[in-house]
Structures are given as structure tokens and as C-alpha cells.
Amino acid sequence: MIIGFDATMLVYQGSGVATYTHSLLVALLKADKKNNYKIFYSSLRHPEAVKHKLKMYKNLGAKVYDFSIPHRIIKMLWNRFHILPIELLIGHIDILISSDFFRPPSTKKVRGFTTIHDLTWKVFPEYHQPQIVAAHQRKINRTIAYHDTIIVDSINTGRDLLKYYPNVNNTNKIHTLPLGVDERFRRVGEEQIAAILRKYKLRYPARYLLYVGAIEPRKNLDRVIKLFNQLIQESQFADFKLLVVGRAGWNRESIFQLVHELKLEEQVIFTGYVIDEDLVGFYNAAKVTLYLSSYEGFGLPPLESARCGTPFLTYRHSSMVEYFNASIKNCFTIPGNELQSLKRVIDGKADLKDRLITVASLYSWDEYVHKLITMYSNNHKY
Image (cartoon, rainbow, N blue to C red; front, side, top):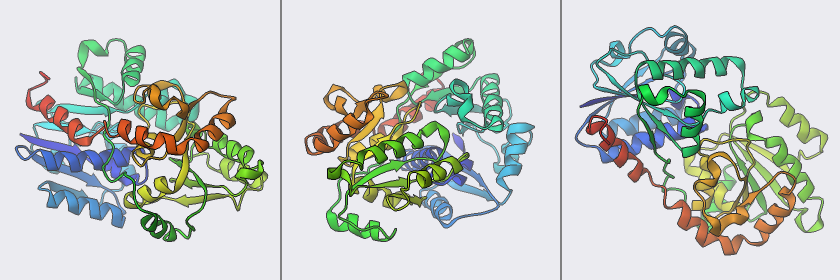
């Protein structure tokens, strides 16, 4: 079979969807030598990181169709007007794998497989720009109309999908496939940690808390910063720094203003986008990864952190409770109890390390792609 893959989400480097797209593609191309892959990518700008990824896919045997059509034009053509079938750009395909945000137009003979990571835009529309909500709505309507096979990251996302679109069970097949965690996330030595952090002008050893994710309202970075500020008021934690790793999303000005108001300019360090290969150093350097988002379809940073043996602190809600068992219950908190929970996790990091690595290692891309390949190879009979 010829598998088409829309890789346009790579343009959002540093985002969860870009990480997912790249990890899935690499795992698929390594595991599946029976089918042929055609990968579509388009953007006016081609950062070095994206060029490197596209070259990697070619080396793994895929045919890459790399266009310079601006991303906003692709969004307008595919999401808003839904014109220009993808086959006109990459030729004949039997299957189309599309992203959480786009469902490219295709001919009726093409079988679609699409991922829905979460429905935060539906559950919490106030956390999203109106045009983003509208784009997701158009995408999911088309996914249903095409009778695509839908893949969700978690039972919770599948439950939300049926809640807001109760008839989808009659038109689409739905499968739950928990994401994998890249094997590069692992324990590394002190010298490697120090070398990585030096690239970002950070000293090591030092005591760091870590946030990984977009700077946007849904992620509750303001709560993370306020919690950090509470912690360093106590003398035994006064030397801690907070590293904020991730791209700046919408409504980010309020975050920078909060840091200024709390006079934390020296203690809160915004690194911006960190390349995938270096992120492992940040997880290893941190005492705790803070992930206090309101809602997650999966939530990769806690699992990535856990695979490095670094505990996390998150709320017990949505998909977050599906993947961690009672052995690491100390990594969960509730609103109003964050400070006490954080201090408990900092003190118990050594005791948690082995249990965290064991749990996180259960989620592999090899298993994910094995199930996905079986799914489309068996003509939806999986």
C-alpha cells in the first residue's frame, strides 16, 4: 500500500503535535518496510531542525514532498475552504494519515486515519483563540464526514469525543492508542547534563524546577510561577530556579507581566525552544517537573520526565490518571495543596526514581506503530 502522511504540523517546532508527528514518522518508517510512504510538508520557512527531520525521513525510505507554500495558505485551502486534494500534490495514495488540526481533502477511494489528541478547545473554549476553535470544529466535522478511522491518545479523550459527538460511533471507528515515549529520554551522566545546560548559558549543578510546554492559558503557567514564588520564600528552597522550556503561545504577555510583578526576573528563566536532543538534559537536571495544566489528552512531559527518573507534579484529572499507578501517587496534587505536595516530592525524589522509570518505560513507539500498522493493514479489522 501507499501511505500518505501530512507532516505540516512539524512547522510548530517545540509543540506537542510536532513532537508527536516526528516520533510517529520515525517509528513507522523504521518498523514498516512493506508499505511505501509519501510525506507532505509545506512552509515558506524551513528551519534547520525541520530540514534535518525531512532528510531523516528520506534516509529511512520515505518519499518526501517538500513545498514552499506558506503555512497560512495551506490552512486556508485545506481547513477553511477544503479544496486542493492532497493527491494533486503527492500523487496516488491508498491511506492518508492526518493530524489533530488538519484533514486534507482527498478522493473517495482514500481511507483516512486521523488522530484526535484532545478536545480542550471544546471543553475549555475560553483557553483558545476563536479561530483555533473554529478550525478544530471544521476539522472534526470533516473527519466524521469522511468516515475516517479515529485514533485517540487516551480513554478520556475517547469519552469526550462521544460526549460532544454522540453519533460518531455510527460513522467512524475509534481506537485508543496511548502515545509512546522516545527512548532518548533516560538517565544521563552529570557531565552530559552540564554540557547541555552550558549551551543555554545555565550552570550545573544547581537546583532547578522545570516547566515544559507552550506558554498559553490552558497550561496554567501562572500557577506554576506563583507556586515557585511560594516555595522560594522558605530559606531551604531560596536558591531554586525555575526553567520555562517552550515556545511562546498566545496571551503570553500576562505571564511575563506576572514574573515582573513578583520580581522573579532572576529566578525564572525562559529558555525558549529547546531542541529534542537537549531536552533530556533539562529533565535530568530538574528536581521536579511542574505540569499543572487544566486538562490533557495525554500529557507527554510528565512521562518524559518520569523516564528520566525525575518526578513531576500534576493534577489528578483527565488523562493524567490513566497512565500512572498508585506507586507514584505522590506526584499528584489538588488545587490548594500544591506547595505541600511539591515539597513532599522534592524530599522523596530518590525514592521515586526507579518506580517512575519503570512506569514510563511501558509506553513505547514500537508498540504504538505495531498496532497502527496492523490496523490499516487489516482493512479496519483490528
